[in-house]
Image 1 (tube, rainbow, N blue to C red):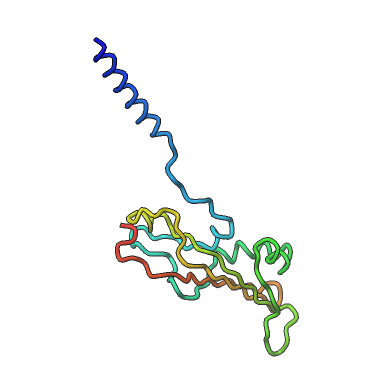
Image 2 (image 1 turned 45 degrees about the horizontal axis):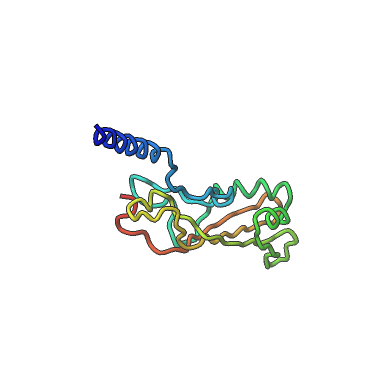
Length: 158
């Protein structure tokens, strides 16, 4: 009788323990800032690569749309204050009073789907370089990014 009570207690404890574990959140990546989200390349799940080439300068239209809103409301000062860009006059001939180049970089988090086989969730891989070319005029605004990082593993995302 005592053995039966002990057995039931052990079984009940195990069941409750497993049930409780189901509600413990799994590790998740830190939330990306709006800037990081806008700069990110999409992971192409079926093809197991990113939407943009790595280690190459590419036009980043999503980031461009995101930053253009701030630029239109506050000029280069908004890009500096809100997002930490370093902006300086762009040397062009003939001289241009409203031509600027703005740059910054940030550590880059890889897509979770890329990491699933390795189990290293939320790791950083390299850095994202960003450059904004502004002017002449307020309507000329182009954004390029360069994800400087090691190449993808052959089995990434499988």
